[in-house]
Length: 333
Image 1: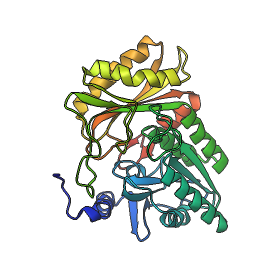
Image 2: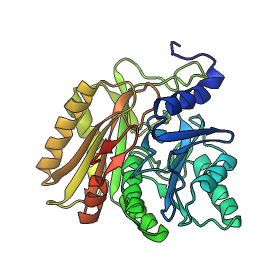
Image 3: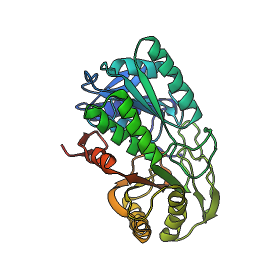
Image 4: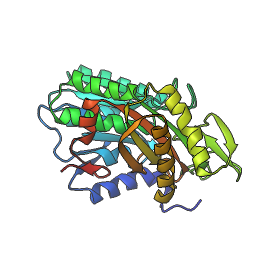
């Protein structure tokens, strides 16, 4: 294992400290109990949006803290959910009086711990709603989940909900936007090579030189099957077909296409993937209305990619286009 780390047990702490120093104009770090929040939080009268989960997926979630997106993120240990205590403390720190929305990826630990935090926050008269992201079409149940996993579509949900909160929507309306974004978003990934969790010291799964994992999870969970390595276009075809089969997107629909890197894939390759995915959407009569390419929901240094397709209506388009200013996503300001 070769990594730019010191003590494997201190990776998360040192990561968030470095992140907070690098982005000190946008975020504040509280180390005990740990969370990161936007520098102007709490924002009076605005619904606060909190997300979080296991570390190792950077820039998700901390990289999306700021105007037009998240108010705070709660980082857990590597690939492990944060406990309820820091979630509750974060909730109190960012509540501006209009309530707090939790955006939670569908992993058992995250679901249970955010549910417990919501109950505890409610005892302090803080209104909390939760939205579960389960955009992964690869498998119905897998390691860590009951039902579909939450993966890169989380970015779309956080962006649209964040914009709704920024324009002044109340808690119920912001939650409705987030749930609608979940309903019209589907994703699936593919791994060329595994990642290595620092404290484990060995790859999280194994692939032969001529194999790829179709439908891999963002923690290295198994997907649909191991298939033979093939040219990029063939692999893109295998990933996007289940997405479109599961998504209600009749010809003429406007869509957002996110091509997401898993952490170890060059942008040059991601744009090759994007080119092919865009061709398929056009062949299906779908209008590629918005797009995003890059490493946004990663799995440490895993090689691979995921595709996310969201069916856009006028409101989601407006919310996606709304100004955002975070360390990892910025436009319109």
